[in-house]
Length: 315
Image (cartoon, rainbow, N blue to C red; front, side, top):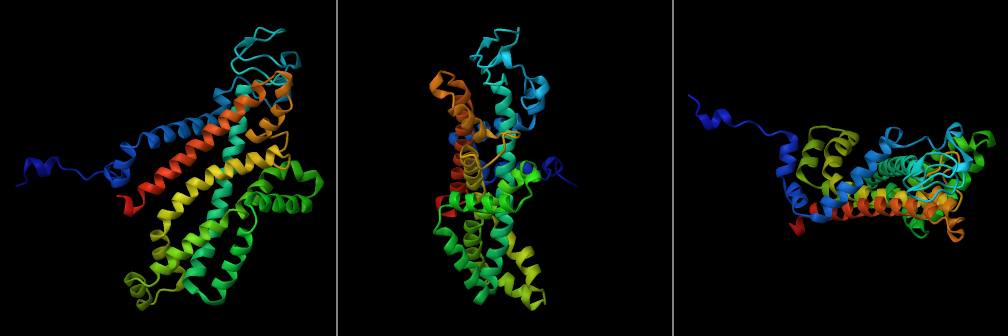
């Protein structure tokens, strides 16, 4: 016979277990984590559903009206009945719509660059920490050399070289992918160093020794046994690196070596708006800049909370 308590007891779902975990408890009791995650989620959802939320497609020439140019926020266009929440730019594009579409480019570049940096850094970190010897020496010396240069300069160098070898007719089409490659290759070092340090600790533990005695090869041990146990610090670095990648993309685009004018990101919009700041059209610059600030700050604060929540010394 089963008791009523045994009958009513059901196994918790993965989401329920995560909510009741130490990290879930830390999240529920951290106002900074709740606010930053809410802001980041709202901005990401707004970018994903930009075609549904935007007033117009600001990068479709057929939808533009030059007579609506320089309309102030919360104003009606002088030559049309349309109202614009955040005003328009010099080409009559709705600033609200350009921010939504520009944020899509910034987020796509940020996520893709961090993913590329993670793949390269984790792979090289596992190899360096597990095998040691000449492989460790070569990988870490390359990492040390790259760390002597600011990451934005490394990204600019890689972007310039990659764009130089790209055929002229394909440069605008491949500019976003070149940008991802440049930021990703400039961001792998911190992943590699953290994974290497964790691998040096994990490879001497009993479960790795047991896997070796069972005859498992190096690759299964690395990716099926060691990798899951070194992912906690990697996730923290990835969250913080996402904010840095978004800022790096905006910086490169602001300097004119990032996203093309046909696919403007938040950085490109800020660069365009900067030219009209002192002529009185402040909204063309301010609203994209505030959006970039809110996006980068919320992701960065979320990464800071995650770092503390996964640190066993602070529990």
